[in-house]
Amino acid sequence: MKNEFEENGYFVLRGVLTEAEVDRLARPIRAAFTRGDYVTVRKGPAYPLPGIHAMGPRVLEDHPEIAELSLAHPKIMAAIQEIFGEPAVLAQYWSIMRPPGAGLGDKPFVKGSGAHYDYKPWRTVGSFVKWMFAVIPFADYTETAGPLTVAPGSHRKTTVLPSDGRVHQVDAARVPAPADITLVDPGLKKGDVVLMDGFLWHEPRPNYGNADRAGLYMKFHAKSSPPACGPTIYPSAVHEILPDDARHLVPYHRGDGRYAAIRDEPVGGVDEGRLLIEDSEEKVLVLGNDTDGWRLPKYAAAEDATAGILDVCNVMGSVTGQAREQLGLQLPWLSWLADLADPAPDGDADQWRCRVYGHRLPVAAPALDTARDTTGQYRWMSADDLAGANAAGMLERGAEVLEWLRMWQREEDADGLPVTRSYGVPTTDVAHYSYNRNGNPAGTYRVGVFDDHGRPVPA
Ligand SMILES: [Fe+2]
Image (cartoon, rainbow, N blue to C red):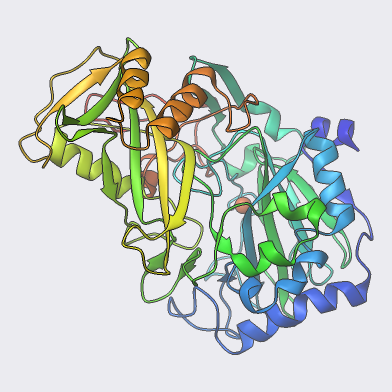
């Protein structure tokens, strides 16, 4: 299995679920589509009219029992972790409903015109470099219903570059014109599960039939390859229902309903963002003064207004915007380090979550304009300076800051294990990227290169 997956970029686990198990999994998801309880319901003609209708993790709050038939199914989990060679973490839990006519426009569909892949540095569910899809079709994906086609070997056209000591750039394949893409139909049947490498090009075909074509599209990343935008927050109900050997799949969750969702507006469950900003001489930016103490820059976090369900929990746009306004500091990218999850600072019962991101500047100790920062002063501290400030009780969350610095500089996780960090950008930066959609000239696009304005370099 592992060799075939690495060679072709995909592997089909045949008949891994019984038809009855698929029906038990699909029942609450289909029911939620029927009653209009899904994220794209306000975007256009609603189910059962044709369209590509989608649902996020919300179904797991009311029906956590479907976890054992999907994200934590023992055979699926075992296959994913065997291929990774390490523990997996759930990133995306997304159901797609394509009723008859979905994907059909005024003109005949051109095969290959929808080919793409989902390595996306602007998304919580795409900003990692060792990851895979696990797709569970709820019906046979026949030629009529619309196969999920794949381009065998296309994942090998993308290369993760060696790290610069902190993060990895990616030479991302540019998906070419339809005529230059070879797609095959893996013949998915109800009960099968297809595992697809995150860099594999794929294309869903229109539904020419007379029955719904629905399925569950999960993404998992290797524990050693965290999402640069930070993890997706799940309902605590699903974490709690998992057996002990599967709890690591959903480590980031909230019990107060503020998990990844689209309600009146995007909800991500991240209240605050903190920045570990390192300069080119390994010094870290702190704000404050010698009387009150020092701290990392921290800002109230918000979702981008345009964020869709797969974008939420990426609060970089709000955090880098405030750093620019209050410090005059341009941060084109960030990479996630850790989440703090505490009771709310004001002492009530609400939960609170802070996302900590790292960044390294190409220059040494730049002068900042802190006129709009309330603390008024800043300093670039070495690791020794930080340790001293912590020992003197003058560094907010000092022990944790030192821990994050160790994780950042040594490229390790909280357990001291090696990680591959990559580039994360605000969700609105999607406008600057086109490599992963078809119609490009051949070649690659380097993710992690920015211009003087802090924008991703044009292709
Ligand atoms: Fe996709």
